[in-house]
Length: 181
Image (cartoon, rainbow, N blue to C red; front, top):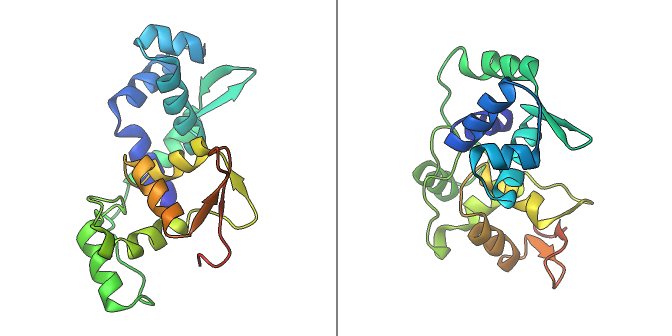
């Protein structure tokens, strides 16, 4: 489910589609991608990082290459067959299941972030994508959250405020809290 979500998210963004189109013509560095598509260095790094995370592109010595085989495989695996719908796990209480049904799209992305009194099931849902005994950079946390919703800063803050993720005071490292489920 998460791989399909990543794939759809990666290729639903017009800038990432332009990057895929550019790399289909030949390999390029991040700087070349930024210059040819008139992107800021930060934006080019964010988009290339997400495409690399999904497996659509790979990087060797700063040069990005389109992974045509992975792109074709992901497309066949995720876009052929039944249209799947998001179904909340049966082991959740009915109130949590209802919140997930109300605030998630069929593909599992977050349609709308609920008010604070209803956010816990959404945060529990996001938390499943973070491993124990691993530290994450802020960028990595943002990439994971952006698979579900563009408001990575707000949701990251909500995860920290809820005690589900902890962070260094300078924001350089994040980790999943043991008692945060």
